[in-house]
Length: 27
Image (tube, rainbow, N blue to C red):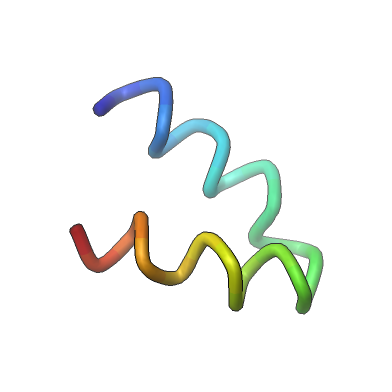
């Protein structure tokens, strides 16, 4: 799960990434 969180943080700056990884953050 830690790896997923790190990936989300890296994609946070990207609007598209934030939307796609929004599910991961919720989980």
